[in-house]
Image 1 (tube, one colour):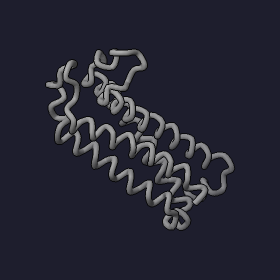
Image 2: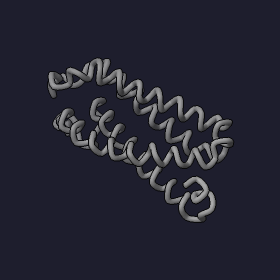
Image 3: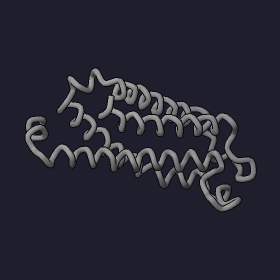
Image 4: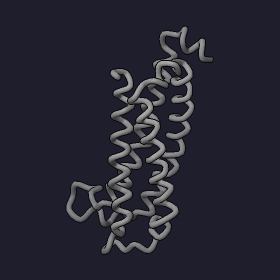
Length: 154
């Protein structure tokens, strides 16, 4: 498969496109959820509080799983084609570290304050700790996407 990716003029770009589409869905879903936790998910005043956080999370989660099923294999294939070059690329290495941080942040949220999201009233909104996780998540995803783009230039 690796030799086919190297030899084909169109197969590697198809894998890249799958990777990008997966990241759009994965990061986009995470950022939409995070924006809702921060009360910034709507441009209309007061509308964000009416979007049920649990329902939004349950709606976005299957999309995130599908996106991960695109991102991981396509990323592994792209790495395998050019592993020697990527292993020394600072943007690629930082992207991997940031991905681990984003996963850690999501796990910490779901095992910690996120376990109680059914109790968060619309009036009170998520507690400060949940908002911190959301802000960190948004920053991480923007950084991950930026590093992914910078791989070609570093």
